Length: 144
Image (cartoon, rainbow, N blue to C red; front, side, top):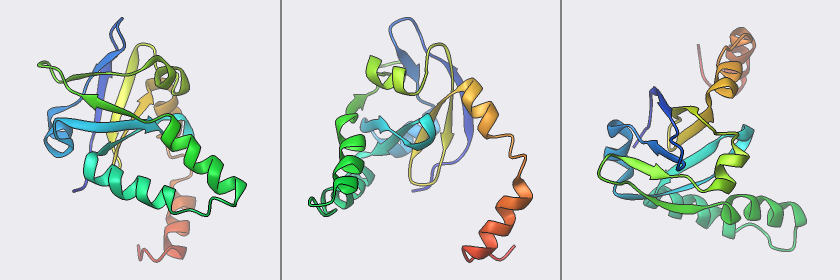
C-alpha cells in the first residue's frame, strides 16, 4: 500500500481536517496519527502502525536514545476516526507540534501520509537541491 499525491485542505476552528478520499480508502475507518520527523504529522493505517510501533518497542530499552525515540512517537500517537464528512480531529498537542492552524497539506509518503503546515511544506518541497538529492539517491542504490 503506497500513498502518493499532494492535497491542500484547511483546518477548521475545532481542529478538524478532511482526509482525502484516496487516502481514506487505504487507511480504513480508523488509523493512527503521531508526531513525525521534520515537524510534520505522520498518519499510519493500523496495520502499518503495528509494524512501525513493533519496531519501536523492540529497540534496546537500556539505551537512552532508543527510549527517547520510542517516546517521541508513542506519546504523541492518537487513534483517529473519520466522521461522515471524511474529517478527523487533530488533538491540540499535535496541531501545536506541526504548527497547524489554518492551511495544511496532506501528502502521500509511501507507507504513510504526512500532514504539513502549508508554509513549512512550501519551504521543504521547493527541492532547490534536487541535483544533490539525485546524487545521494545514487549512493542509496537508486540508478538514475
